[in-house]
Amino acid sequence: MDINVLKRNIGLNEHGGSWTFRVWAPQAKRVAIELEKSGERIYLEAEGRGYWGTETTAIVEGDRYRIVLDDDRRLPDPAALAQPEGVHGPSMAVRLGGYDWEDTGWKNPDLKDYIIYELHTGTFSDAGDFEGIASKLDYLAELGITAIELMPVAAFPGKRNWGYDGVFPFAVQWNYGGADGLRRLVECCHEKGLAVILDVVYNHLGPEGNCLSEFGPYFTEKYRTPWGNAINFDDRDCYGVRDYFIENVLMWFRDFHIDALRLDAVHAIKDFSAVHILQAIRQHTDLLMEQTGRRHYLIAECDLNDPRYIEDTRRNGLGMDAQWTDEFHHALRVTAGEERRGYYADFSGIAHLAKSYRDAYVYTGQFSEERGQYFGRPLADHEGQQFVVFSQNHDQVGNRMMGERTGTLVSFEMQKLLAAAVLFSPYLPMLFMGEEWGETNPFQYFIDHEDAELVELVRKGRKEEFAAMHAAGEAPDPKAEQTFLQCKLNWSLPVTGRHERMLAYYRHLIALRKQNQVLRAGERTALRCFTFDAQHCLMLERRMTGSNELVLCLMNFSGQPQQLALPDHVISPTKIVDSADPEWLGPGSVSGQLQPESFIAYSAFYA
Image (cartoon, rainbow, N blue to C red; front, side, top):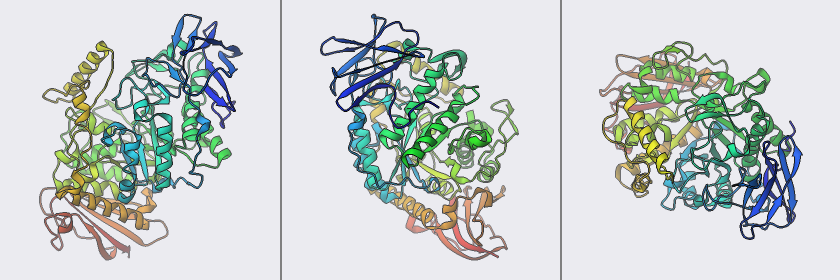
């Protein structure tokens, strides 16, 4: 472990008036920095193992520059901190160390206390930038959110993108506000008591503007991924590639004060090294925390149902603190009436939802028809704080052909039931921007690529994807600006009618979760779940080790009133929320029964 975790060791960095530059280009014979304003070239010296470096006073902050390889290839800096003219333009010199942080008193909350709000910078506000997010932080704090999750902000082609087509992992998207804009946002979040999770992509880079292959063997033909050749984490000369992504992790934590990273689709990372790249990231993160005293979390998106990803590295796990749990979403949506097609085909509804409450994973070794294999393995003692659950997210909304949100797909009553199913689970709850008021604008897939051939390939790919899901009709054009604009949140909705009541209901549920010690504890292994298949109902019993307190949650996913008797061991039940209450514009409560598509929770004691 030879990376100095307390400073950035690659790219262009300012130190007391002079600038150091370091780049990995193992196949180059000569390497230089070329300044745009003068055309001057500053040649680098070979440092060994393919690294080149120099120190110079010829650069000032804001200068545009390119890297010249072998005197004929002029390229942006692969570790650039800013690409103000886009992914095809020159890089810009940025002082990372020049920011005067004022969040020294900030303490990252315990992971079990995270209530996450996922948002897309471009569509969250009218402004579509970091300042637009900052203007809504008071609203998020009042809602009860404790952590925002930003979809990827690494520089991507054009001005609108989900972020997963980023090609400069160190550069913050310029029209969002750049590096300083992101740091100001993080500081504002910490001032309001909000942690910041950043979505990062280490399984692929976007196709347009991706110049990493010009510098070295960043990709390998050894494996294929849905995006082409895999990033080279274990093939010949992979050391510089591994350093590059470890440096990226450390930069977000150290220089941007990001509290947690959400690592996109880690199942698509191919690595058979003795020390997997995720383990290396964990080790370097731990060393950084030890030396700075700040706490950071690593949250993986993974659909392999393999506990090794969240197992401690001392037990040969990959060391992630938590993971997204798509199977909870799939089981919940099928229970709520989602048609069983595509990846929903594997889920039976109420029985699988109960299994996800108990086991986090639905598939723990049984045969999956959709995958055509026996899939997954059981968890051991992993508790709720290691799993992030949701009733919708950017993928599950945006990968519908028309990008319909839950607010337009299910009834008002079912929306309330879905919210409670997530927020009263033993897991880390995540909301997708706008769901708390029942946003009706879609969230569709959009791009702003300049390459016309690539745009056509994206259009074709989307059509084929929806054909596989048996979706009828024509998908919106992902390149059209109107597709992007109609995805912006409608901030006039949460102050009107049913939307205002839905928002108040979400606030109430979040407050209950934060105030009730049983709900806060997140103990999956102390939970019991009972299903009533004929009534299409579920009863969730939340408990806490060492206490006879419990919370009993009754869920009716059917369209008819149902009667469920409370278990004999439950004494002194006190109703704490009823989604059918007129306060939430429900049909009204009826003693001894659950109204259609409703949720009731009781605080009680174990006899």
